Image (cartoon, rainbow, N blue to C red; front, side):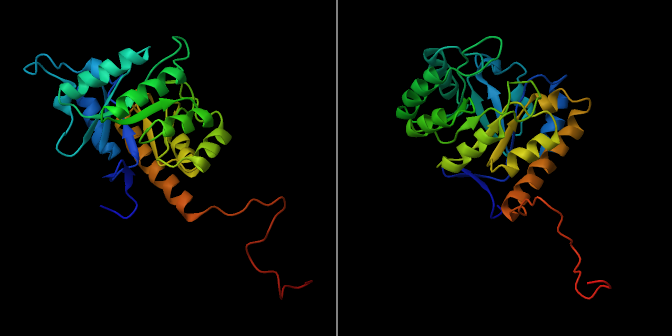
Length: 259
């Protein structure tokens, strides 16, 4: 384990890239992309896992669960009650007591219902879940989720699956400034530069699915995302130079003719 591991709820992860399992052309392609990404956390929708008949093929058959942590999610839930039930179902099925909590408030934008999200977070935390809520890029909502016991906050960069990149950089900066738990940029990444920007803003990790799954070559894009996250993290830790209004020569001018 390196010295710059991602730590969530006391658990270390090697990679700061978290990937999903939807929209791939096939499960073998998904596995190849996961391997290329270097991710050691993969999010899986509880509704997509066949938990009643384990003798049938499952997407879990294509995930190296000995080395990759499964993060169940409550995708497709529109109420706090439904999300809580889905999280409980995932835990009872043996997936995990961790959950990526999603409570959607609008069919068209798929923006989170933050009121229901906070309510569901409180309930699940009291039941012993490690809750990672997907939320709007709203600093106030992020703070309330922390207060409710969330182990991380996961603000969107742009609508799910849009590939628009981070639309409100300053909101992410504000959340980063005040967050006492890891900040994971979730949703909106379209290409490698978007992931790098997220990390340079101070995100602790980036979660993505569509940007890799819908790429022309998902395996190459997965590797690109791995490198982009690594580069962005290194740049953030290194500390960028200050911005200047005018040029500042990189070579000394002392001793030159005319000076």
